Image 1: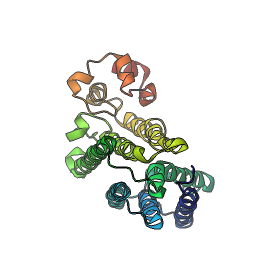
Image 2 (image 1 turned 90 degrees about the vertical axis):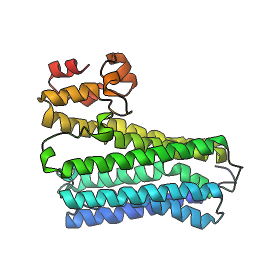
Image 3 (image 1 turned 120 degrees about the vertical axis):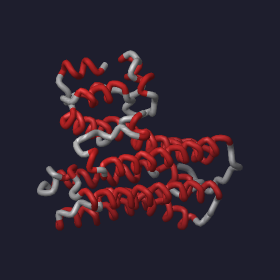
Length: 293
């Protein structure tokens, strides 16, 4: 990445991430204790951001702001997810992994890749000697992060309160932001990480632009791998035969918050542009899946 960026920072963050995730992998494998999984992922982001800021020691304003953004996001998410899993019990994602060391190792390896890759924009900014004056894209990035942070936090709290009410047991969350998006928390997370990337661009030169891999990786992960597909599959299995749920799914955007009256009347091809992919209805009976479009 040239002489301005100390490439050792990339290696250092990779080593720290692997070691940190390996520690929690050992705890999970030996004790069959998976309540700290999401906590381990979220706090790893904080460690990388703070470590690179302190070791570089430049303390540029842009570096401090982006590091602060990661710390605020990581702390909120880590504490929220830890509190939630301690309330709800075991993490169902590990039902098929607890006694399968190979699958468990793959999960923790993937989590390490996720942390290191998504952290790349902050890592490169913190490792850079460049300190250009603030630009419009800095402000745009900060606004995107702020909106995303508020949306993700609000959505998480709304769903938590909804599920804690005994009157809502056996129902899907369709209140607050969840009335306008089936996954507003993921929309917020994607938005805030793209905001961090946008705010990092004044520093980037040449091959450093490859840090765009971070937000792209996160977006693809949530859209096609461990985010929306898993939750849609789970909801379809639980509520796929309930008329109210099918109406909610037809009228509610999968990601970008939109008024149900608008989204519900859009043609199927336009919904695809808005991330309504067939994989999100693969566990519905075929006739019901067709009806949703």
